[in-house]
Amino acid sequence: QVQLVESGGGLVQTGGSLRLSCAASGRAFGTYAMGWFRQAPGKRREFVAAISWVVSSTYYTDSVKGRFTISRDNAKMTVDLQMNSLKPEDTAVYYCAASRRVGSYYFDGDFYDYWGQGTQVTVSS
Image (cartoon, rainbow, N blue to C red; front, side):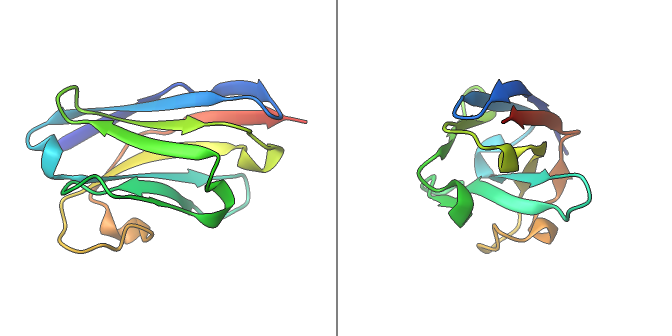
């Protein structure tokens, strides 16, 4: 069992930066693939970024490539999402997720077993 708690959300102007953090509790964190998803009002949840557990390979949706960076610290049991050059369209609730499944379906929310409660990110224009 893994519990996830996100932090770091807030209000920022266009072009600004935020760093989201997801703290995990439980065992074997280092063997979980970790992902960030987001959901804007009236829209479906969408994949943002993921990091594998084997060699910490990273994956991003096209709209955030070059602006967002996902990283993990297995000793601290955290996964962070550094978000730069934020745009109003990045406004959403951001969720951290963990997967212990075999495979690489990082883009699919069904691949993940555990979810955090979410943190709000609002980018003003």
